[in-house]
Amino acid sequence: MDRKQELLRRLPGVDSLLLAIEEKGLAADMPRGLVVRCVRDVLERLRHEILGADDANNGLLPDSEDSILEMVRNAMERAMKFNLKHVINATGVVIHTNMGRSLLPEKAVEHLIRVSTRYSNLEFDLAGGVRGSRYTAVEDILLELTGAEAAMVVNNNAGAVFLALDTLARGSEVIVSRGQLVEIGGSFRIPDVMGASGADLVEVGTTNRTHPADYERAITERTSLLLKVHTSNYSVVGFTCQVATEDLVTLANRFDVPVMEDLGSGSLVDFSRYGLTKEPTIEEAVKAGVDVLTFSGDKMLGGPQAGIILGKRVFIERIRKNPMNRALRIDKMTLAALEATLRIYRDMQDAISSIPTLRMLTLRKQAITRRGKRLKKGLDKWNEDRLKVFLLDGSSRVGGGAMPLQDLPTTLVGIEIEKVSANALEEFMRGYDPPVIGRIENDRFLIDLRTVQKGEERIIENCLRSALQDLQPGREEMVVD
Image (cartoon, rainbow, N blue to C red; front, side, top):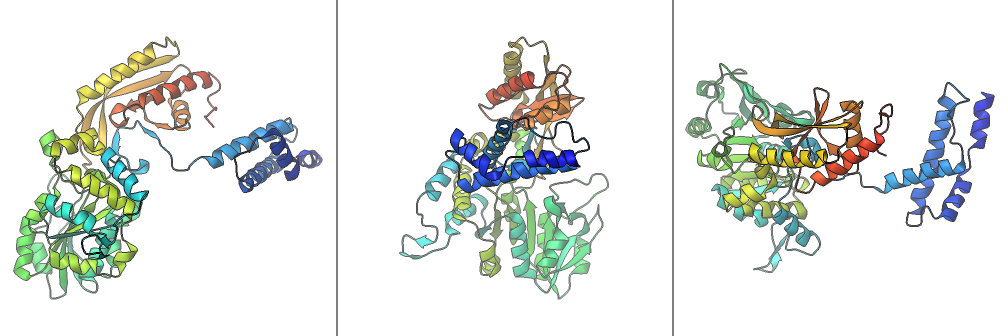
């Protein structure tokens, strides 16, 4: 204990470190409060290490004040960096929930910047010179693209589902097929949101099979809604049956009960035309006669996170007047990005080529192979004996809880560094600035260029150069700071 107390007494004080930092000019452009906090954090960490160490004679204290100053400088640099940062998605998962899901088109980014850096007519009617509605910014283009009577937007699709149920079904019953009681990310469950909205859930059918007669037997005078939920994030195969949207609408019309459908990852594109799994489109649901339709603005649509509600005017107007709408309303930046994204869909070929999500989903394997060959050729030119580069067949994924059974054929670039484990390489690349996120299979680090954006290959190359230098045999514990 005496040795530990001696080491604690040798730690410099806060004031002496601050004076040294000022004299050496280590924090000229940094806020004073941040510098003080970093100094205190470093000293506290050193005290904790000294008191908690088993061996009080070895490696408990940096050998000089300069070493402690270096620790403080690194802490200040980390504190000054943004927490939300650009990463290289080399996983092959296109709509990667953990990495921000869909990427915005350039046109959407340009419009977002214009609107967010200047005043706008967010809630101002330019024609009448009076207060307007923020929904008018996107309602016209939504109606044009889908054929719906009315539309509105909130901050996300969970909010859209909640708001619609709270408006149309509070204190009454909503009938749902048992096979559609889905759970999405973050433990968001349809039964839970229905309970929060004040609606009473009535389950019909079984997990794998539900028929029109199941709905019909469950309809009572308390029934306010028939709800259909698209099971976009999983698939039940084999002996299955679900009621088609058109048939559900026909049944509902007989009893004068509205139909609501939650598409989740709503799409304006029929992906079966591009060799992918057939998914219900927004336009098809509207044509089927659905009264209220909800879906996400990002994910398959390829825009910003938003919850879109559209359908029959009588129901949308009721939802719009719900006081909870204000708590869930969309902001000007999201509106700007969503409007610009939706307008691209007026030309479907332009949408496929310029909306990143659509472009990556429909990208041919041959194009990915060509990029893989270029990356491999560039790495092979280094003539590094420790570096092994392979081209492998593989599969990308759609992600975002969409098309769970869809494999997207791709070409993977496999990376091995002699006497360095794949886990050590993955950790190093994840710690790089910007981080490079790939995946590991068969003790090999894999890069899927389907989701690597234009120009990011150079960043991957620089990261691998650093890995070759820093991840020497026996030094795998080293990670980029």
